[in-house]
Length: 287
Length: 53
Image (tube, rainbow over all chains, first blue to last red; front, top):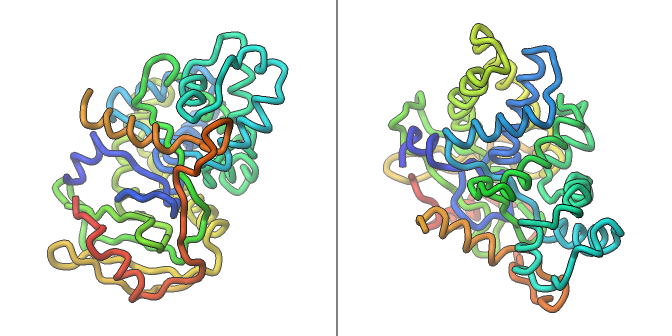
């Protein structure tokens, strides 16, 4: 798969060290990039986005780029079910018989209408958010340049669109704990092109975990979705360049914030693609 | 079912929160050792588990 193919058919996963699949990593994955783009859109247009705007923009995005990834984790999902939904009188009468994981997934996929608002409420509580990047964007919004309400709009939009019949909005649940022993920045020498081949790296392998970040690839991949947002009638076409600028610099700032919180003190490595598929490993600093 | 949909389905089905109700068996466990990794460990980590897409 080349970069161009990845752009239209791949997914950006989180830098999270608990994923056992080969990933292109960026903080929060697609959801983190969408939040970044939505916040930039607000700044460029000078007006807040409402829930309906966010729903429409996510549909617009995924109709073109085919899939969007958001993740949580098992700990957060257990808190959601045990401490949230099972203790909420707005939800309990509508739970029915749900115990096993697959029963919960089915119920959460299509909660009864009377309980939907309560479910969305619990899904936006920080304690029930299993992805560090999105949780930090909510609890430390000033550091991320993100309005609380905008982050909540995004968190509500994913399950809403899935319930409406769009499984392209993937909701991945990661298991285990953050025990990553390094941050790996994957680097491809030279300029990236549409035909450049990119290394996918698995954050969790055989007893080792590390945070996997593809800042260079992410910067490249932001160009098209960023311009695509500008075409969705929420910002003027003339503001496309301004929107790109409003995405890139805050994106780097947000990555620093999230990795600084999740991986402070860990060694930082550069994984540089050499001949063939070999990656040259070199420590470049400490987070 | 497309390959992409099948992959998503498998991943979601087997990774949704256990520990609630009857199914309390952890579906995903991590035995990872804590502590910083060395360059040699990173190289071992990469091994055959990296694909150049």
